[in-house]
Image 1 (spheres, rainbow, N blue to C red):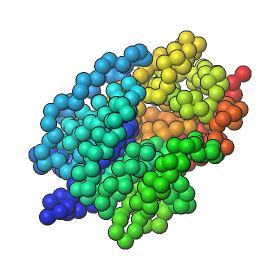
Image 2: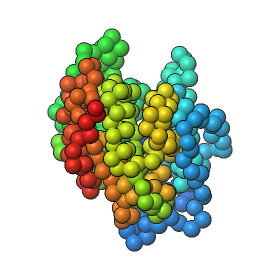
Image 3: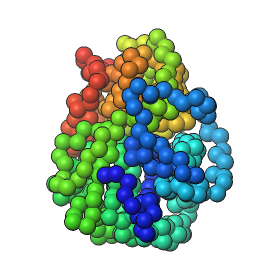
Length: 403
């Protein structure tokens, strides 16, 4: 799907909705591949493989920060850029670490010449009404809608307003795999770690909106649907276009990184989402770090401060709270020659972002004994699929089994 003419011969008006730093990163990757024009008529064509080095004069990015209270983020400043074809709408969450990373990613989007509209979408009981009301006009005028999370109730509600004929879903991590599969099977849209449980009262009240969103995300004679993904997509719904995301923008913008001789470990929020037992996870991290000589632990933005404090105290790992998505942190460097991870999005994305650097990504399977009693019945199969379908990663020879 190439950029097409909008109303009255103008470029297509594209509205993107993001709720996490990774979603915004993948919107920038999609816009780069599509060559969307930035402010003042600037255009960002795809960069050929032989030119994937940081451009001269690229603004410096501060290093990742050790764990601790995040510094207050300043409000986005400056008017929207005139002439930009892409407007990124940030439906801001309340989590401080996520907000901080989103502020940094919003700055990068502005550097690319795109408009950024920051919405305090969860800033009180009346915030959703103000947000939806303020976006109704732009939604009706947009020719194309890009979204990072089709499972989001906010996004599903906004989809009921738009008249756009082009819909694009960019990666929201491993959830993209489940979204495409559910769309292909005509199932209701439910996040994988919640599937199997009984719908709550809010789920039932929202069911008509969710069903409407699923219909709008189904291609028709009047609507085109694209999935822009670095994840393996095996069940492709009829009429859906799948475009590969190989992190061209990331490789052009950052690095190549300085490689250290050690190993780094990537954290996961599987404890916070209720899938993996906290004590088992800590024992697994300790065993994995000891076996492979890891010295740093890159925390997921959703990991709790209490859990990270305990990890630092009991494993001796240096806890790092990244200020940007890990793909950018790793590409910027320094980064270990080996990156250890549990099943997660990064086992698919880091080999792409770090292509040609010599960094090895290794993944440790989740032992079924680590799962909580309340974990979804599909959890083990889904996590095994995440690992099994990853390309260019090394599976560890044996599952780490905590004592």
